Length: 216
Picture 1 (tube, rainbow, N blue to C red):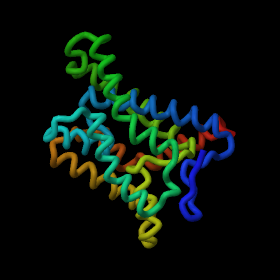
Picture 2: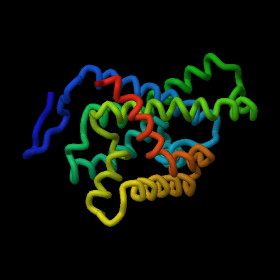
Picture 3: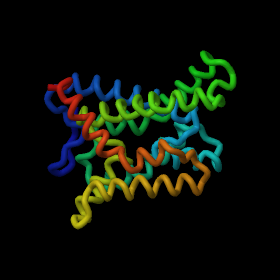
Picture 4: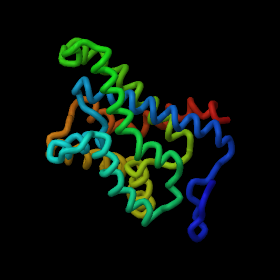
């Protein structure tokens, strides 16, 4: 399944498509699981989710719905400037990540005792495992090569047009901008937000190289 606009294909099926699709779906699910834990321990989230948390302080929407709407705004720019970035992974991450996070938070509310995530010791014990799970999921969905979320696609689009600035710098500025906006709106800014804003790119690049064998 693919469609073409001009000479640009969207939703193309690259080699090893089934393996890539499974990796993308597992990646988004695992990333949503990690995000649910990061939101619960209240030590910061990724910059995109930080902004979403800030927005829901002012609108009567669930986290999943608000994140989808925020993604839709950047999605319009991706459609305008680079359709080749759109694929099954774009839809998977954009439409389902926030709802998967909401789902797992509901599961935690059923399985864990009340106030579990309010205990300082529990929060810090879960910090590193939660961050690792989130990064593993993000790496898997990106490694699948089936398109990027609008949030992840925009730094690529910008860096191609601002050639004097490296992609790493563009990505860092992009993440810090969302982190700052989220902080101003009252989003969850913490150690996780800072780590992701400054080190997400290099960490995911390293993890992706380890995962490439799964779709070889």
